[in-house]
Structures are given as C-alpha cells and as structure tokens.
Image (cartoon, rainbow, N blue to C red; front, side, top):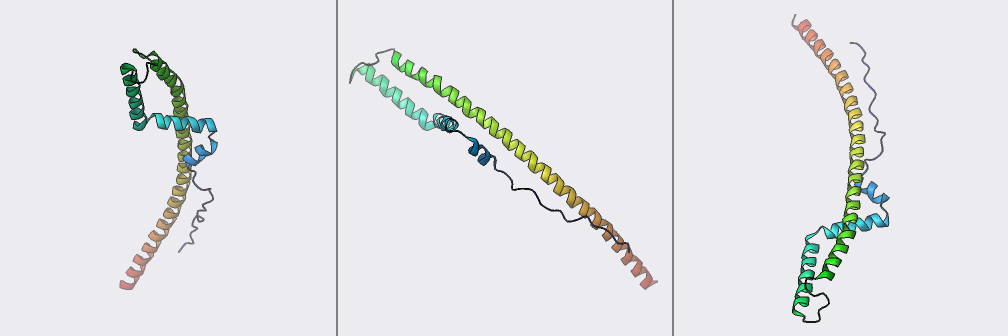
Amino acid sequence: MNRHIFPPPYRHEHGPVKNANDVVKEQLTFGQRASDWIADKVGSWQFIIGQSTLLTVWAILNVTAWIQHWDPYPFILMNLVLSLQAAYTAPMIMMSQNRKADRDRIEAHIDYEINLRAELEIKAILERLDAQNIVIAELHQMLVELRNNKNG
C-alpha cells in the first residue's frame, strides 16, 4: 500500500464573528443616538395616537372657548407647531435611515468575511475528503484482492 499524505488539519485562526449591531453601536455619537430615538418614537402608533389626541383636544378647546381662544379657527398656531415638528423630525428620520443603510453595509461586509472563511474551511474539508476517498478506494481494492486470493 502506498503511503498517502493527508492535508494538514485545518487551523481555525480567525477572530470571532463580529455582530453588526455592536460595531454600529460603538460608533454612535450622542446626536446619532438621539435621532435614532426620535425616529423610533415618531414612527410608532403611540406617537400617532398621542399626537391625534393632543390635536383633537387643542381643536375642541379652541372651538368651544372652554378655557380661552389661544388659537382660534383655522388654527394657525397649530399649523405652525406641526410645520416646525415636521421640519425637525424629517431630517432626523433621514439621518436615522442613512445610519441604518450604513449598518446594512457593515453587515454585508461582515457576511462577506464570514463567507470567505467558510469557503476556506469547505475547501480544506473537501481536500481531506478527497484524500480519504483515495485511501478508502485503495483499501477496498486490497480487500477485494485478499478475498480473491483466499477464495482462489
């Protein structure tokens, strides 16, 4: 039987897999965290219900003059407040969305690195399996010859 050389054992010398959420969280500034928080709150049903309730109460109080007309119909002050809110929240939401796109790019890069490592490991496994297949085929051939010699 020929002496076969198996490939050396694969050594896992790569670092741990990175979590994209942790990588992004480490890089966030106070302003970025604030814009993410605002985007999370403004984009919720709680905010929609709360704001709708506030606007309804505002309109009822001003139409009925129950307390005092501080913003009589057609509610110009309310429109100004809503315009200011929109003027500030829209850019903050855009900043948050841009950061989420950056996070997606980081996650895609981490996935790429993992795929490269997996490709190397699969290649090492296939090389070892090929070497084992050769040896198994030779051992099988030797068994067949031994069986033939014994019977013949």
